[in-house]
Length: 93
Image (tube, rainbow, N blue to C red):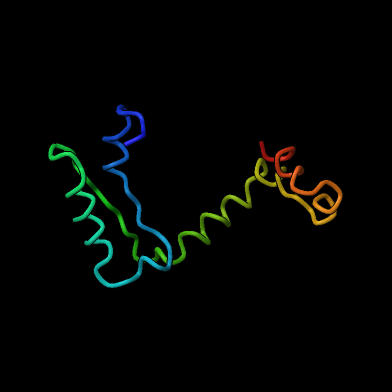
């Protein structure tokens, strides 16, 4: 694993399964089983699959879009036409 060893426990115990393609029958259970098999034996693995997870991406995007700090990063078509992809780096990074 390439993540910091100090956060692995938190990552393994906070896995959220979301998105429409995760609605296949048995997928959350399979993910739990396969990640548990790959994890160190002493590691606690916890996956969460919300019932309405097919909408999670939309809800997250809607929340993000409503934040005033994010709205400052919006790029209009005119800005993009004037500056091209450089406008992304100027406004977002």
